[in-house]
Image 1 (cartoon, rainbow, N blue to C red):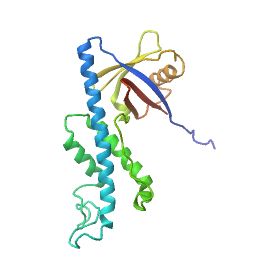
Image 2 (cartoon, rainbow, N blue to C red; image 1 turned 180 degrees about the horizontal axis):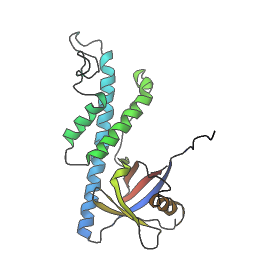
Image 3 (cartoon, rainbow, N blue to C red; image 1 turned 60 degrees about the vertical axis):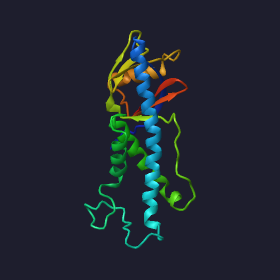
Length: 213
């Protein structure tokens, strides 16, 4: 009996340019990117802070007995403290706080990722062995693969263009004309799958941290 094929995820850092010849419009794209970056930086710290407080609440024995400390959805458990699921509690908060400032898909993926990361380190957090993670500006923004659209090869086949939430981008491969272009060509041919990736604004440059399966 044949064993099932195994896969791995590899990540490549691909520099991007704003694919817009009009300088004024290109400037607006950059303003949008910087706004998203600011929101992600603040949202990530907000998520981690709320997760830590939620986790610590049942341990706060100095609170009055009348204070409920059951971190369950009250719709599922009568004694529950939350009015929604735990993972949705932080997403609802962020959606209300940053409505219209950033695509909700980015916040949703950020929220899911940090819930998973918090869960992995939960024992160390509860024992005081590790401080909760903090984030700075420049933290990569998670991008669902389905939101990278209209990917196509440009003239010369070494660079590619695509749209992300209607914003136009193109790759800038420089001297790298083999590895990363080949991976993107394989995505177009259906030979590889582009997974959820990250967008990073760093030192006035833009990068796609592209994950390939």
